[in-house]
Image 1 (spheres, one colour):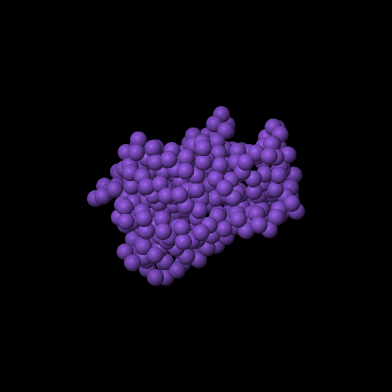
Image 2: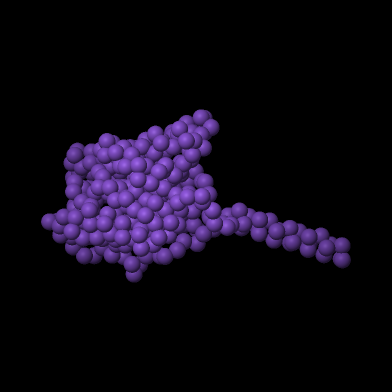
Length: 340
C-alpha cells in the first residue's frame, strides 16, 4: 500500500515523550515530518526528544507536563494548537509503576500510579476529544499492554491501571460509533519492551527488575502506532507473546493464575541485586540531568521486529494470497479428476 499524501504536516501529541516507547513513537512520527507536542516531566529527556525530532525532519514543541493534572494536559493541548494548528493524532503513553507485592504497597502508591497511568490517559483523551469532536476527525491511540487483560504478580498497580484504560476505551469507542463520529480510538497492546523504566521504576524487589521475555525494542511499538494512525483498527496486538497471553487468559485464566504464581516472581527479576536507595520516578522525574533515550539496558536480548505484527499489518494481502493458493489447489484437483 502506498504512503498517504498529506496536504500539511500532521500535528501529533505524545505523552510520556521523553523516553522509552513514547520516545520511539516521537522519532517515528518525526520521520514522517510531523509537528509534535512533546509532553513529559523531565526537562533533559524532553530536550533530547526535541533534538531527535528536528534531526529527523519534524518540528517539536516540548511542554513539561505532569499528566496526573488535568489542567496541565489541557493547557498543553491549547499550546500545541496555538503553535502548530489542529491536533490530528494524540498518543497516550505516559506511565509510572511500582514493582512490589500487594501486601507491601502503600495507598499513596496506588493513587499515584492510577493518577498518572490511568487518569493521565483519560485526561489526554478528553483534551483530544474537546478539539477533535467539533472537527469530526482525529485519531486517539492508547498505549496498552497484554497486562490490560492479564494481571501478573508484583505489578498490581500498573495492571489495574491498564485494565482501567481498556474499559474506558471500550466505553468511549461505543459512544463514538453511536454518534457516527469520524474520531477513531485504538488501543495498541504491548509485549515486554526494552525501555529505561526498569532502571528507574520504584521497586521493592530484591533483584533488579526486568521485562518478561520475549523482549521487543520500542521501535517495534512505534511502527504499530504509526501504522494504525493510517489504517484504523480497534486494537493491535504487538508480538506473538501478547496474542498468547490475551488468548490464553480468555481460555484458561485459572491456569494462568497458577503458572504466574510459579514463574512470575523470578521472570521479572535479573540475578543482579537491586539498590534500595536508587532514585525512582514515581513522584519526580529522573531525567532532569540525563537523557535516557528510548532504549533500556536489554538491547542484547531485545527483538527488533515482530513477524506477528508484520502479518497483522498485511493480513488482507495474506488472505488474498491464501485464497489464491486454495483456488489453484482446487482447480488442480478438478483438472486431475478430469484427466483420470
